[in-house]
Amino acid sequence: MKKLVTLALICTILLCGCTIETAEQYRERIGEASYETIESPANSPTQSADSHSPDSQSDDSQATPSTIIGDGTTGAPATTTTGSNKPSAASPNGQSEDSQSKDSTAAVPPATSPPVIEVCVLSVDCSTILDNMSSLKKGKEELVGDGTLFPAASIPYVEGDTVFDLTLRALGSQLDYTSLKYVRGIKQIYEKNCGSQSGWIYFVNGQKLGVSSAACVLKPGDIVEWKFTCNGGNDLN
Image 1 (cartoon, rainbow, N blue to C red):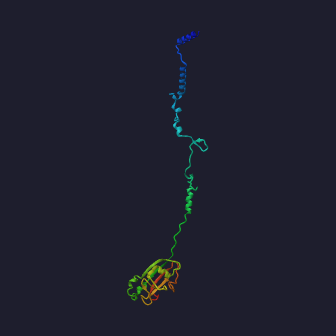
Image 2: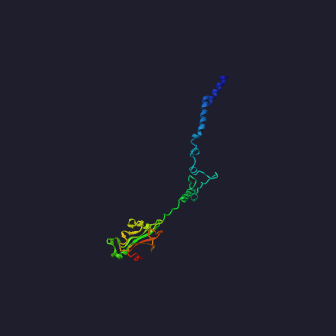
Image 3: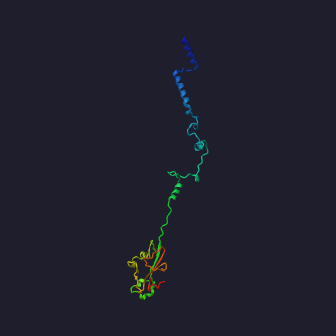
């Protein structure tokens, strides 16, 4: 009976033009179909490259990203403040450059003026000899010149200076004097070189004083004049 059923089944298959598929062939066919179904989306020629590519975003979306505003929402790009509202750069100690500049300026002590040098004025004149050349000791003519032995000049003043001190500071070795600081000669013109009553007399601010030059104390700005007399002082103005 079984043989008849089998024979009938074979005949049916042959009549229908079908082929018998083994179990192994069936499994291979099902497996290839499943693999094609899984891989087909990535390999499909109709798939759009723009829809799946990482670079599919438009240039506009990449060039203009959303800007985060202060409250965390997106919106127009934030603006920055420049100009006078820009904070000053802070130094390591926390002070701004402007405040440091002011502090450094305030710390500089004011410039002090140089000390004022006090002076007196000194001059030496023997012009009276020009009217008494016949009485002048021989060999002294060239020393007289025009009568001005020391033109008026400012001499540094030291507190407590006397007429003698100032004269010695100005003339040095050109001043001839005794141990008692009595002035006998100036620039080699001596007393009695032009008569028995000739000699040197000093004036302070135009006044003839009756004390020795070593006893007459000066003050800053005083004018000291040494004048040679040929007649005991009577020929001096």
